[in-house]
Length: 120
Image (cartoon, rainbow, N blue to C red; front, side, top):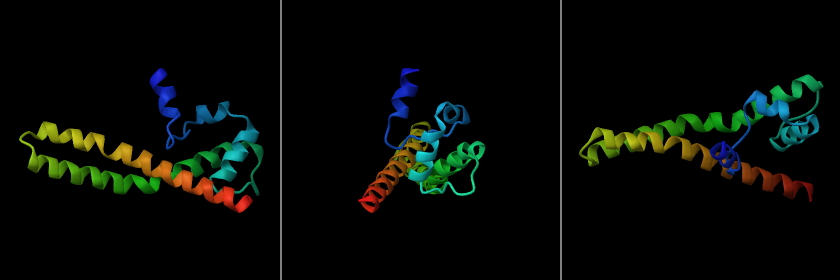
């Protein structure tokens, strides 16, 4: 449980689970949806949370393919350079997820800074 809470505090971490979004107040969901670049027009209260889930996931879906390709590339290089394929599997396991979190977090920070600049 401590690890889960620590991971949720990382800059790139997002709430995608419907159970997590259900716990958030509706006003917080609206605010987060606007931060993600979504619009509140045409949404009733019961459609805000699914729209927020889609908006939060969109940021990471675009990063999934390139991160997996980078992981496969790093595995291939490690398999050639190292003596054991088992050791190379560490590269396959360790590269994609941190890349997705890091790039997603950087994009989020840049988008947040842009929104702050627009509001000033």
